[in-house]
Length: 103
Image (cartoon, rainbow, N blue to C red):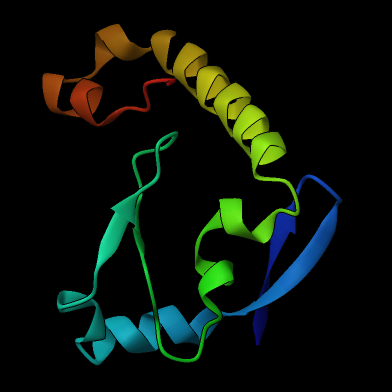
């Protein structure tokens, strides 16, 4: 079964194996994997997972134009941050530290 990863730049979907990342996690591959941090959402993205094209792991690499992705991701991160601000006073410090902070 495939999951669709939407490329908002073109509205196209690229098929990614739903089980590939899970299989890598269960097999212990991700324990020793190299990760990089997403600058907008703070996610740790593996550099490589067996059976999944590397460009399918990093949403920026899936877009035809990285600068357009950056603009869209920064806007989305800012909207997440604004939404979180509406209830930030009702959560603990640990949750506030983990929240998205627009770059």
